[in-house]
Length: 212
Image 1 (cartoon, rainbow, N blue to C red):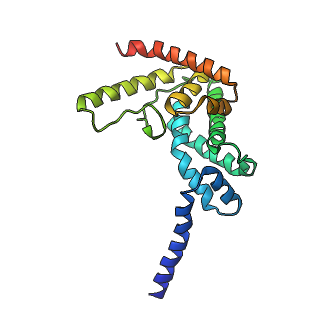
Image 2 (cartoon, rainbow, N blue to C red; image 1 turned 45 degrees about the horizontal axis):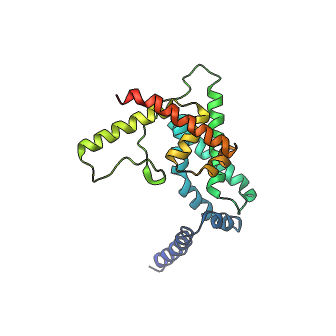
């Protein structure tokens, strides 16, 4: 009996820091991890895993490979966390790492005869993006049309050139600001706006005949 009580006490001691960590900002979690609280890194991983997976998947169109690249992103973050500048946004830093890995993947693919981009078929999670598809207030017919539109949008996005697709996904699906996209992609603000404008125009040209 005493052993069970002690085991429950130890679990409570372990869970309490995790609950407290969930209330902290990203930069605070980095600081906690560097101070020796290993659960802080797991909290960061929990926060960003799905978001990074969705971003990389939409960029390269390969679910299994996206999982690998997400893990590689966290490995690089783990190795270089001591270099993180706490005056910057952690989300921008980790998205930059993920974006670079995704772009390297696309460059590697371009060296073989395989189709560069695959159709993106996963349903979008609307928690972190302005494009939202599911709403319980819609009728079944409306939901069917929204799902059909989503599929066509995914097909059109998959056809955008890489440098246009990255900024389009970051802005229209991830909801990133122009400044954040500039930092993530490593190009000037003007270039971001120019690429995004061209991406939107190209997207409209691609999707228009799909919806006729």
